[in-house]
Image (cartoon, rainbow, N blue to C red; front, top):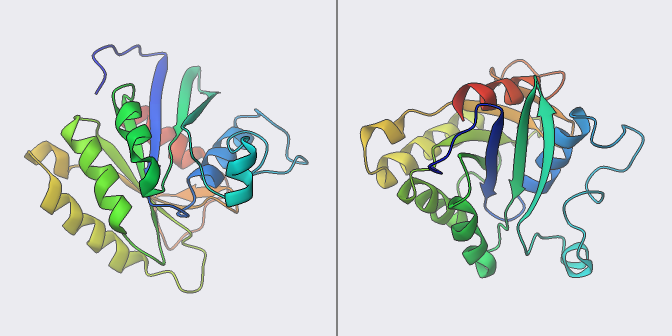
Length: 198
């Protein structure tokens, strides 16, 4: 975790395997934070602005944007999920106060999930777990939560790292919830958890 903590600012990295929904989640957070309007197209406005990123549909370089929620400025850093750009994740962890470990509810933890979680834990950046795409018919929410728990047990270097909040989202639909059986209405539960945990 960064040595400097200002109660009015949170620096938050979003880490995950490629295609687990990082950029979509960032755009949903920014939309709720009124960084852009509901009628604007989400997904291409803020984060993946590089032509190569748009062409390939992946984040290559980490990017940040800010949103204010309950008088706290949250600096959100969207990191690459592709293994070829892992150095960006390492660099960003030095600046983050906390991170969201995003895991696809269908795919579960993948190789890059292990890598980015290891980087966070080694640098003492405490993750919040976000299970994304829970609205998909193929979602295996309970199983994926258990797989993530196993991953933490494998990688944690101290008992404190085994204590983490778990939230559930449909970034594409723009909602988060603390109960996977009750769909959310917006991203407020995730914002509230960020303020409480980071």
